[in-house]
Amino acid sequence: MKQVIVDHNGNRVKHGKETVNGVRLHYYMAGSGEPLMLLHGVPKTSYYWRKVLPLLSSKFTVIVPDLRGFGDSTRPKDGYDMRTMAEDVVQLASRLGFEKFHVAGEDWGAACGYALAAAYPEKVKKFAFVEMILPGFGLEDWSFLTTENVNSNRWLWHINFYSVPDFPELLITGRERQYFDKFFKNETYDPNIPNDAMDEYIRCYSQPGGLRSMFEVYRATLEDGEWNKKAAETKLPMPVLAVGSKHFIADEVQRQMERVASNVTGVILDYGHQLAEECPEDFAHVLDEFFSN
Image (cartoon, rainbow, N blue to C red):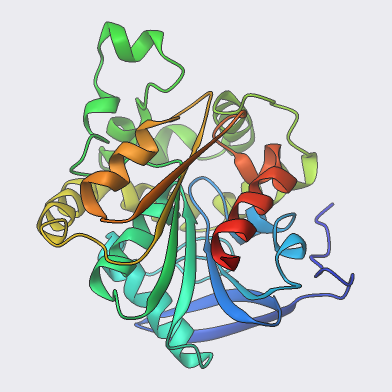
């Protein structure tokens, strides 16, 4: 059963929906203090952050959206490149009254956060980039069928599979539970992910357009790569925290950010790719320490 999401005092978070940039975004928020935007990855939703929010909401106004096409946001036909999805988040923040804010993104949420920070550096006070390889900076290479990739814990074969038109929808529709349960837990170090989390993710990806929206993110990878390479000609000016997991992307996360940002600090946690599920306390502590100082 889906848990009620609460803040540090045990009070229910505030849910809302706003139409921005041609999409209606669902979000929840709680707390007080400087605004902090938390961006989820794939195959997840805003529910991913439910255990982290109450550990941060005593110091920050925490805003957690479902990105375009995900969770309980609407699923338009296009706009799944990271630059467009970053624009969604910027417009949502502005609608909520926040013109400057912190950003933490994980997985594709980190790629979205990078696009946001690169396009609007004046709006992002600090940026945490968590467990992601940027398109144009190695994501494609990690998807190749090579001995090194296959023998690692992080062969990203699905990058290519999801990018093929139509076939992923054909093969996974009706098998969402079998597929995502295996896929999600395969990227963890501790696969003991609660049933409520898997139920919620599968609910959202099983809805009409759920799979299509996810795959469209991957189908924009080459477009994102070209945009990222151009954007990286100017390094991010704000402080950047690169968070890697020891048993997945690890120290490559910091190397990624050192290529595109001028002030980078790196941290590695002794877990797998799904940090907010595997170690929410440790993960929240790292974010709190970075954004508070």
